Structure formats: C-alpha cells, structure tokens
Length: 361
Image 1 (cartoon, rainbow, N blue to C red):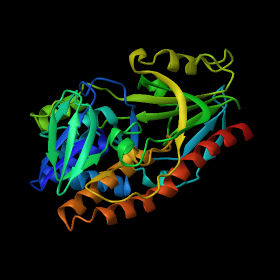
Image 2 (cartoon, rainbow, N blue to C red; image 1 turned 30 degrees about the vertical axis):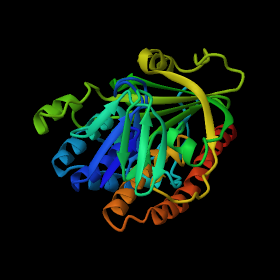
Image 3 (cartoon, one colour; image 1 turned 135 degrees about the horizontal axis):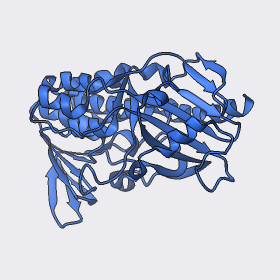
C-alpha cells in the first residue's frame, strides 16, 4: 500500500509516522518551502486520547525526547483586573480542559514528527484524479504521484477538501486577536501560577499561559536522539489578546499594570501575529472513495484549549488503524465526523463564553 499525505502539520505527520512504523510506503507533500517557512502558533495542551494517539504513532525511541520537551499543565486558572488584582478563580472544567495534560510547542513537535519521514517541501497540490484502484496527485511543479490512498491534512485552506467536498466557508466571529511569545522570566512566570490567567477590563482580554520545557529541546535531542535536530527554543509565556472592535492597535491601555506592558513589549516581534478569528461550520458526510481528510482540513476549530490539535492527532491514529486494518474509509469518516461535530460547536461556544464572562466580571 502507498499513501500520500498532503500537509505536514501535526495530524498529517502523526499519521505518516504511524504508517511508516508499520512498514507502509508513505510520503508527505507540503506546500510551504520548509518547516521554518511561516509562523504556526505556540504551545498547545495535549492529553487523553490526543496524547495517547501521538505516542501510539510515534516510534518508541522518540518517546523519551517527546516527554523531555513537553511541560506540565496544572492548577486552576485565575481572572485578574488590569491592575493585577484577582477577581475570580476558574475551577470550571469545560470539554477542552478535560483533554489537556501535557504542554507542547507546535514548532518543536513538528520538527520531532518530521524525523525519518519522506517529506517534500515546496510541493503544492493542484488536483487529483481517481481511477480504479489508484489516485493520481498532481503538483504545481508538474510532477504526478500515484497512490492507493490520498489524505488531505493541509489545514483550513485544504486543496484536497476543495476538490473533494468544496472549500471551507469561513464566517467571521467579529473578534480580532493577537498572539505572541515572551521569554519566561520569573516576574512574568508569577502571573501564571496555574493552567492559565485571564486579564480583562471588560473590552479587552489578555490570556496568559506558560510553556515550561522540562529540558531545552536542542539539549534534550543531543542526548536522547542525536540524529534529531530540534529548534533552540527556550521556555516562554504565550499570550493571546482579544481586541475590542474599535481597536486599531494591540497596544495596552495606559492604565494597565506596568508588568503587563513589559510583557507585551518584550514579545518576539518576528513571531507575533494579528488576525480575525473565523468559524467554519461542521462538514457534512461525503461519498467515500480513495481520498479522505483529517484535522483542520475537515473540521477547523476556533482556539479553545488545544481541541483542534488533539482532534487532529486522534484522527491520525484512527485513520492509521483503519488503513492498517480493514481499510474501511467510510467507517473512519463516519466516526470522525460524529466525534468532531460537537467539538467544532463547542469551540465556538467557548469563544462566546470567554467574551461574555469577561464582560460580566
């Protein structure tokens, strides 16, 4: 069996690792020019089936490195006013929180998941044709590749999805956000004693979360898996700011605590991004063939405690087991869509909840 995976994100790479471990001929094609080509976010919380799925697909020799480069997520969240007075303690455990147990950095994890895979960067899919028992994938450079199964793991703008079921229809939430990373100095770490901290003045929300590596990734790789080269990333504090509709900059109001101004002002300028949050409704079933989807290519989610990342990894393991088993893609798709539909809706509800909670407080 030959499998071609389109997209070198977490889900596609996890699937490829699981298939390769079982001896399947699997190749990954990624439209970006390289793993460093663009910013793709910071820390995410993985746990439960998401964490188990990744470990099930990843070669056992890399498990110690995965553990060493993750971090712990524990303790209740806090709600603070802009002067850093505590006004609430979040003991609520919505659906997304139940999936969190380990913190990982997306960039580091992607490098780890690329280990030993046959991956072609700068390879943009232009379309595919199904014929009998094979699928032929065509790429912008004129090359064509035949396979038994083609998997779209290429995110919200998926070229595979566009041909299979139509493009994702994006709906603006009306919320703009900024994401950034600041080195984890002690003074900033004290802001987040638990799993996360929210600072709000009613119009603007600042979400703070630590990424405390158990060991520096590059140092850990040198000892535990010398053939693996990980980026030289140090522990940091990840922050996300939700802006009021009238804001034309992410500068904090003057009356916010000086420590918060220092936090935002000390962020890495090359990896700070601003954009509008968009929602995509759950996908409907489609006729099953030899082409299928996983992760954000089929069920993109709003940022909500790592639900999207967890689901992509769960999809990857489920699809891997299907391909190594009876090959019933229809059953995989039915189970995947049923499992993720409520989570897509939940991610939207959580965004609304955070906005409403902040205004009420």
